[in-house]
Structures are given as C-alpha cells and as structure tokens.
Figure (cartoon, rainbow, N blue to C red):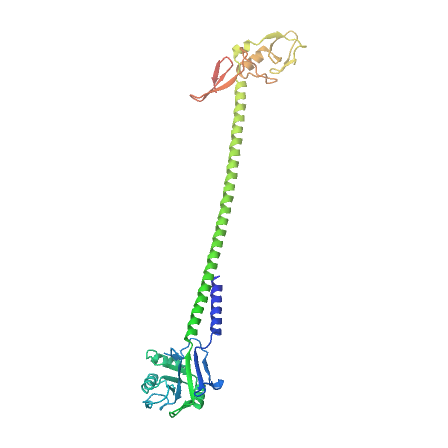
Length: 357
C-alpha cells in the first residue's frame, strides 16, 4: 500500500510539472505600438526549476545592446548619459571568466545581463559565480541569442529604439507548483499511511480472531478431556464398588459355620420321596432308605460326616446350590468396616463377631 502511494505521488507531481507553464519569459515588442513581434522572437524556458535566471525577482523592460567585448571578460565602456529606458547587455558566456563578466556588465551601468553559451555548463558556471552577487542574469540558448542579435539588439545607442524587450520570471507560478506538488505528496503520504494503518488493523484483527479460535478450540479440548476424565473416574468408582460388593458377598458366604453351628442343623432319616437327590455329592455315595442324613434349609441332604466337615471347616454354602446356610440365630452375615483402625469385621444380625477381614 505504501509503495502504491509513493508511485501515485510521483505520477501526480510529474503531471503537475508537465502542466505547469514556463518560469522564464522573454518577449520582444514594438516600442511605439507596444505590439509583440513575431512568435519566433518570443522565448519561454520550459525547463522547470532550472537556474536559467538568477536574482530576477520581477518583470523588467528595456533595450538590448551588444557590449564590447562581447564576452564581458574585459573592461566594458559605461553607458552614455541621458539614455532613455533601461539597457540589457547581450553577452556570450566565456567559461574562463564568468565572475568578471557579471562585474563588468554591472559596472558599465546595464540593468540586466542576457547570457548565452554553447553547452549546458553555462548554467552551472554562471550560477556558481553570481548567486550571491545580486545582479540579475538571464540565460538563453544560442539560437535565440542569434535571433535577438538580428532583430532586437543594437550595437550603438539610438535616441529612440524601436524594439524593446520584456523579461519576466513566473515566480508565483513556481511557488504554486511547489506548494501544489507538496500538497499532493502530503495527500498521497496521508493516504498511504491510512492504508497502512488500515492494513495493520485488519491484520491485527485477523491475528486476534485466529488466537481466539485457537483458545476456543483449546478450551473445548480441555473440557472434553475433563469430561472423559470424569467419566473414567466414575466408571472406576463404580467398578470398585461392584468389586467391593462382590468381595462382601464372598466374605459373607465363604466363612465356615463352625462345628457348633453345624451341629444345630437337623438330622432326619432319608426318604427318597422327600429328598431332591439320592447321592451325597461330597463322598459320591448313594443314600439308603432310613439312613440318617443332615438336612440343610435348601432341602438338600448329605451324610453327617461329610457335610459337617464341609460346613465346619470350608464353607457356609450348600455344596449343590450355593445357598448360604444361616447360623443358629437365623441372621445373615454381613461386613462392617470400623473407621478407627480400618478393620473389616464379619458380624451376623446378633452382632456376633466372627473375625477380621
């Protein structure tokens, strides 16, 4: 954006300079009628901001005279007294003595020096030597100097010259061009700065938007991770609770009844019609009618020796259906965890202690 503004500024300034008029005018008039002569004798300097005129601050009118010597490097006879109007010296530039030329022309009484040279070095040479002198000097091309010699200059001083010359510098136009060009440059720079600021603002907004999206995505990912962690912890807790419940059941059912509790179970004769099985699953021997058997609450019967050994030392479950055999008090066995020493106790409904887990 800034490069475009600089390019536009340069184009605008170039157009302003191209549209601007010349800075230096030399016009030739008829002294009696004040009419301009042919257009060929009118001179315009179309080199903008050049040093074709020095110390010329206003329009000047006068007559052109060719002094002797023409290059002004030696003494120039002064102007005769009583001449009408102002006289300008048409001199050729001699690079060896530009400073002496200006001094000699000024000392001779001329109001203006119109100099011409063969090369562009004429401008630089005279500029370096008369910039601080204060005497007005106008530089023209060689071909225009020849036209002035033939049509508008005098070698002697007539009493009533018929041709006069008007020299003017368009200082106001130059100042206007400078001010307008500067304004155009400032405007282009302001536009470029505003464009750069707008682009930076847009980039900043886009950067903030991208950062907000990234933060939002990270927040969502963090929430998803937290949700998964909560679900995982909940599943872990539920799994631990299920394991504790299973462990509680195992602890409650795997504790032997003991010999005392086993002896409380009833003993009745074997009747095939009342029994659910005809074989002791512990010793794998068939029952005989009238044989004394130990009956469990689940209506399964076993040899007394076999079931007493099983219930008294191994388990409180029925060997066939795994039904818990209640104790003599008829209460169920459950687990109690004491907070004092974290010791789990097996208690029945009568609060009888059966041991620590």
